[in-house]
Length: 241
Image (cartoon, rainbow, N blue to C red; front, top):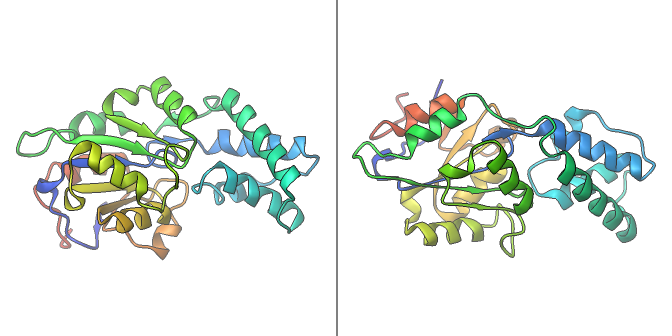
């Protein structure tokens, strides 16, 4: 069921930018497993998966910092943080596809929404705070990569979301204006990124951080990837939906 809070002129959209974790893919289990492997390496007790999932979305360094802080109630010293960060990256690199999968309906939706109602092609891209190498590897392995003109990660630019630098770079690459661009994501970080770039936003309630969408409301809430097809096949989605 679509919930529309601000009308989006869908017919004018020429660029669709997607978050990755919690939007295109369910990567929670591999991320949680990697965090707990890192904690074990640091001789710290494990955390519940649900708690770890709440730490995801602001990049690996922040994920590691939050997990360490949850265990000792303090910010980790630089030596421990660096050791934990490097171990996490190494472990996740090897285990990033153990349980990760594309959400049901994602590929079917991507096949359709790249075309606007007027028949023109839309550009699509990925902008995630996950490091770019695993992000691209996951997209390749799950058959997502062919649908995107570019896939950028948290280390692709000098700043991460919610800073708009990455969004603005993708807009420039696609030749799209802010009013012709929408960011689809599962957290308030994505909504804020869209606002900072002057773009539209669609929130995904099926993702890893749906509760944060209550704190920063997107223009539209979608309950499944199938809703994307409904949204982008219309000329306009208004608040009567």
